[in-house]
Length: 409
Image (cartoon, rainbow, N blue to C red):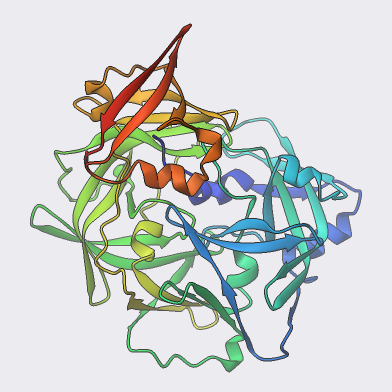
């Protein structure tokens, strides 16, 4: 089964350069540059605590957009927007936004595309109101999506942001009121390509260690992504899976999934890190080394853009190994109802059970997929030794298949 594979790690590449059409141009310029941004903490104090949940490796926060019912947004350090990204769909239709067409100069297309945008957006979170934001409306990504939108720079460029995994809270503090008093490591960062955070880490594979510049991206599902075109002097792991490692507006990104022996951030080391390698042609090449949620969620991290540093402290789950799907198949969540199998990994439970590319799975243990939440569907495929009864449709034939899960990577 395909886990959450958002393309948030390459969101900024897809946005490209936005040029407003004449209508509402001034409003949009103010929203893009952040001059219309306003923040109001309800308590009147210098900080606010916002609860979050973790979906896969994503930090997801509850928000209301222009007074909407509660929506789920991924907090993404890799999103450079001074505003929010919204995905097309029924939830968006309910917002009744006044949409304005803007030109996107796509980096992978020679022609100019138009994206719908809206300005002067208001976002309500527990204890906090943000207003004067830009909203960019994106076509839905391929793959299973468990959230309604993305927010990033509107937090990180205006507040010191602490993501506290132990408390399940995001703490936003006005920079002038913040002093770090924790016992973790302080790591300086630089800005790359605008708002992307770049730090140095050390990676070890088969006894060889290399210092590597990496981007920090809370919107990425993996632990580490290695840019294979950069010529890093590291051996490639022998054990790996060919897999779909991401989705973009232009299609899926193929690559390999493996394990990195050790990754060191400051004085802290993580072992057996789930790693993706981009292989072959990609609709939008990443061309960066990236640390994603699979590593970042092992820490309580404070992001301080004003001082260009992060503070990292191991959280209670520091020694938890990121688990990859154990079924041996990868599937598209077709029309939000069924899994359509796209890849079968050799020597896997799926292959041994006789599943084939093109098979459709519509139920697990007699329960329709639509009766599970996205988080429940993910959890079902990651318990070693568990047996799943899959209801399969192959052409006109319907049958059940039993598979016993085991680790593949």
